[in-house]
Amino acid sequence: MYRLINQHINPILDSISEKHVADYEWLMNNRHYIEYHFKQRYKSFWQLNAALLSDEFCDEYFLELENSLKKGSADLRDITEKFYNIPSNKKGANKLQFSFCTKLCHVVNPCLPIYDAMVRDFYFFKEPKTKLFLIMRIEEFMYFYDFLVREYDRIISEKLLEKSIWAFYERFNAQDFTTQKVIDSLIWAFVSFLRTGSVVSEKVVFR
Image (cartoon, rainbow, N blue to C red):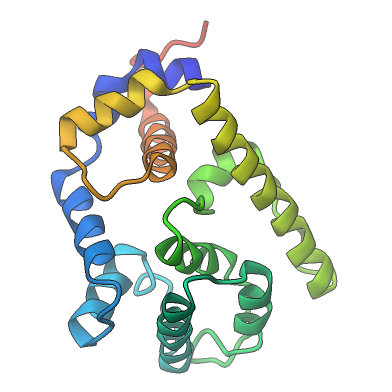
C-alpha cells in the first residue's frame, strides 16, 4: 500500500488543499492560546462540529487540552476513559470518542499519530464491538494505536514513504508538519482518493 501512495503521489497531493495545510499550521502555532476563535477553528478543522458534540463535552475537552499543553503531555488511555463518562451529545449519551482523544494528544505532541476512519480502513482495523466492557474496548483501541506508533516509526526508519513525504513538503512548504503528521495526511488523502472511485476509473491500478 505504501508503494501505491508513492506511485500516485501527485493526484494524492492534488486532493489536499492549501487551506487544510494552512489551517493545521495556524492551530499548531496558536495552541497555547485557547480562546474563543481558536476553539471555533479547532472544532471545524478536527470535525468536532460535525460530530454534534455537547457543550459540556467541548468545554471539558478544551480544558483538558489546555491542561495537557501546560504539562507537556497527555495520557491517551486516561483521557479516553475520562471522556467516555462525559455525555457527548444533547441526548446525554456516553460514547467512546477515541479519535478525538488521539487528536488532542497529537496537538500536545505532534509526533503522535491520529486515529480516524481513514487510518482504520487503511490498516483494516476492526473496531471493538460496543457490547464489550469499556475497559476491553479501550484496550483494543490502545493495542491498535500502539501499533500505529511503531508502524510510523518503521515507515520513517525504513524510508518507506520518503519520496511522498518530501513531495508533500515541497508542494506545501509545510513548516509545522512533523513527519508523522505528513504520514497521517498521506494515508488520509490516499483512502479518500480511493473512495472517490479511483480504482474503478483506473486512476489507481493494483499490481
